[in-house]
Amino acid sequence: MDWTFRADAPIYTQLYEQLTLSIVAGAYAPGERLPAVRELAVDAGVNPNTVQRALSELERDGLVFSQRTAGRFVTEDAGRIEQERREIARTRAGEFLAAMERLGYDREAALALLEEMKGEET
Image 1 (cartoon, rainbow, N blue to C red):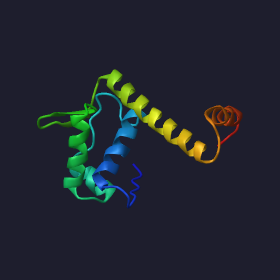
Image 2: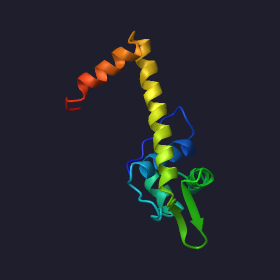
Image 3: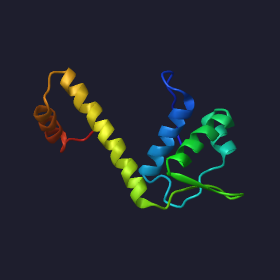
C-alpha cells in the first residue's frame, strides 16, 4: 500500500481513512485477514501504537473484527461495507459541490460539467 500522510491531521486518522478506503474499494476482501500491526507499521513507517489506534477505530466502527491469536479481519458484512462506501461517496460529493459553488457553479451546472466530462479520459 502506498502510504501518504499530510501535516493537517493525526496520523492514526489518516491510517484509518486509508485502510477504510482499501476495504470499501475491495483491496481487502470481506473476511480477509489484515496484515499484522507491526507489519503495517513498518510498511507505513509509523509507530505500532499509531496503527493499533487506527485498527481499534476500524473495529469500533464495525469494519474489522478481531479473532484472538489469529489477528484482525475485514467484516464479512457486505451491507456494512457498502454503507461505509456510500457515506464516503456522499461526503466527497458534498465536498465537490461545495467547491463548485465557491467557483460560482450551482448544482445543475456542476452536474452538467460532470456529465460533459463523463466520456473524457482522466
